[in-house]
Amino acid sequence: AKLRHQGMILGPNGEKMSKSKGNVINPDDMVKQYGADSLRLYEMFMGPIESAKPWDPNGIDGAKKFLDRVWRMFVESGKIKDEPNKNLEKVYHFTVKKVTNDYETMNFNTAISQMMIFVNSVSKENVLPKEYAEGFLKLLNPIAPHITEELWNILGHKDTITYEPWPIYDEAKTIDDEIEIAVQVNGKLKATIMISLDEDEASVKQKVHSAIDEKLDGKSIVKEIYVKNKIYNVVVK
View 1 (cartoon, rainbow, N blue to C red):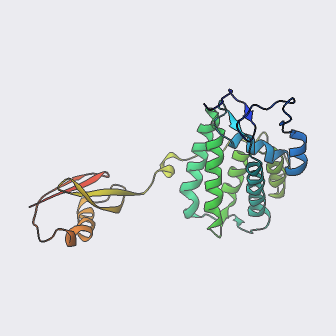
View 2 (tube, rainbow, N blue to C red; view 1 turned 45 degrees about the horizontal axis):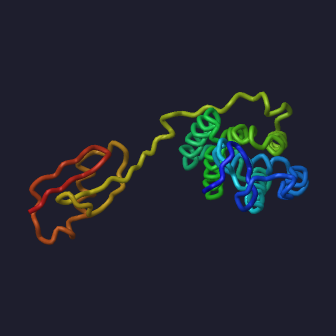
């Protein structure tokens, strides 16, 4: 049976930590080696806050590497500019929405995961709008207050980030403008196609036929039913 203690960090083999067992992790040692922000980040990233979480020394190393990556993104990449970047618009607004909601429900691990996704997206771009950079620091600040305070200062701010207003998101910019729908022939999946959200049905039909016409084995189409933005059904005989 899996040992579980509410909110408890377990030893590497799932055992309860205790001084008598000599398996206690000294947080002072972790702070000295990895920094306080890395320790905080790792503890929040280990899993749901109410669950038992086995300690993994590789995990805190991964947290340190993520924060190092954030530092390089702000200090060394040269990407932060007062310019827009449409490629980051959706992922930024979605990140603000998810992190905000996850913090309110104390799902810190999934909030951190989404911030990692944002950093990965930035790595593929040449421009990180300053507005997005500042918003990201505000999202990360409750988890990693030291590095975000310093980066906030590097961005040219003289006041602390602590009392800055929380970033806001545009709901319309969190929605996928492209979706994948299934194409079924006589009830069997034959293809999937990418369409624009609310794309004209005639355009969708053209894409469907391009995807399945060679798979009909000479059969004739007798009926086509399109459920908007969901599925396209074709009946043949």
